[in-house]
Length: 262
Image (cartoon, rainbow, N blue to C red; front, top):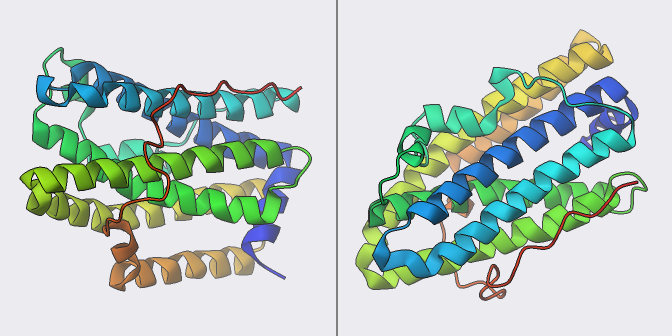
């Protein structure tokens, strides 16, 4: 039976497909680590109290990149080049979502609206990450090779999402509510399209690697388009609501180190 579980199992069972999957994941996490590190360094004076949490966010993303690379090394594999059409983080930036890398490379303090943009972008993308990791944890949380990594990353993504909710609500109480909602809506509607395109690209590469029959590839592509149709119609709303999380001050402590996957 064709399912998310069976597709991911095929990927895990194939060295070439697994290599591409982990390489894409590691690249995206490393980019997120760099972005958060720069944002922490460029926060305006009025929001400097956020610096330790933003830095912790970046340290977690760097850790996730190291975890995916460690999973490759455990199998005797090395990272491969990430096809441009599968680079979720960079495609979002090219669509004007989040903070441009050109801005982050300058040594100029960010404005408050830049920090709101960062947090709103993170609220949307961390929702996606948390949802994906929850699915993988359900199917593969006990897997002997990848289960430990999935559980650790899933917990971190839940913390990141809680942090975004809490900080955006704090900024809304400070009078930025309309700006936050506008940017959240823009990010969410753009993200669902980028996620569709990246999903189609990843599945096309996996189909070639795993030699899927054309009918199977068409069914998977149709499923991706079905998810997009739902998200474009109503599903995007889950990415823009804000509520105080049960996990308060989720990024208030030091980042945990990446474990060894020997």
